[in-house]
Each structure stands twice: as C-alpha cells, then as structure tokens.
Image 1 (cartoon, rainbow, N blue to C red):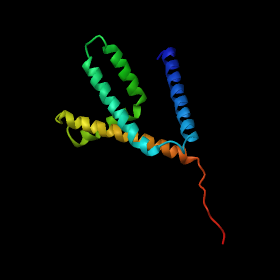
Image 2: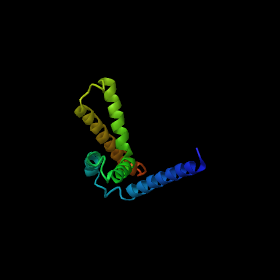
Image 3: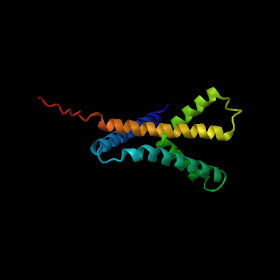
Image 4: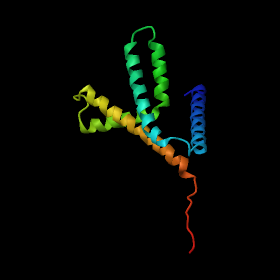
Length: 145
C-alpha cells in the first residue's frame, strides 16, 4: 500500500465519521419534529426502488456510450446506501444456506435480496430513532401524597 492510498483511506474514514456526526446532530436537534413513522417505511422503500431503477439503468446501457456514467452513478448510490447492500448480501447468503443458489430461479434471489435490503434500511431508521431519544432524560411524574 502506497502512502497516497493510505491517505485516501484516512480521508474517506474522516468523511464518513463527519457524516455520521452530522446525522447525529441533525436527528438529536430535531427529534420531536421528525416523522419517524413515515421514515420507517419511506426510506427503505425509496432506497429499494432507487436500487432497482439504477440496476435497470446500468443493465440498459451496458455497452452504450453512457455506460461509464451509469456505472459511476450506480457506484455512488450503492456506496451511500451501504446498509441496504450489506442487508441484501446477508439475506442472499442466508438464502444460499437454505436453498442451493445455483438452482434457485432469479426471482427467488431477487426477492431474498430485496427483503434483506428493506429490512436493513428499516433497522437503520429504527436505530437512528433510538439514538435520537437515547440521551433524553426520562421524566417520571412521581408525586408524594
């Protein structure tokens, strides 16, 4: 590994850490006004639809003049939606343990990956909701008779 690759890795790590700190600040400062119920279903569904659209787009322009741009856009999307990618991978790996992946129809693999993607993003939103309220002190209304 050259020093430039190490410096790049450090910058990527610092960027991701800074992004996480910004997300924490945002959700903790607006925890009462964030529509958590809508986010729990909207974010996983939107990222799943976005992943399907990008997969279709990169497949449609596979050998065309816009293939490089489509691959870069898809790469960026899959980088920022890493929890979904990890969840889909884990779901497909679990599906592979239960069912032989080589013999499974494509639609079964797609359903397994989509379920994993959606559940991973649902878990991320639930974690962020918990994290937003984790530092809030519990107020007990105890009155002496």
